[in-house]
Image (cartoon, rainbow, N blue to C red):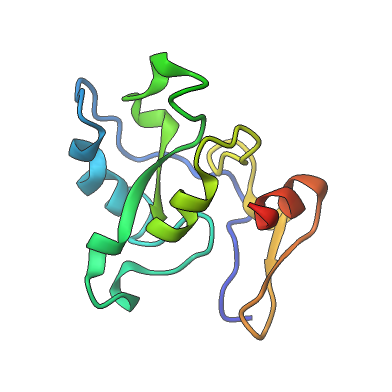
Length: 125
């Protein structure tokens, strides 16, 4: 298999604080998540516009948890498509809490398959 989800929870290497505009965290998150979407594993270099096709996603949506809107630990790096699909969904897995390999699997044809109810829910999103 060419792509695999992490077998352990993501351990954050950075911990910047104090930004009110979450876009200021983007350089940190790019490095933190190895320049790829945490959900579909697409790499920013695969897109013609590079990191313009990548965004900052809230694990717990700002509308549901407004106090965590600009909290670094609530942010992940995601492609714009995954982030737009997720929107205000509150049932999304956190890669820093639960390894995605238990919930998701990339098949040889590139299809992502859900292995658990939370994984299947993420695929539906």
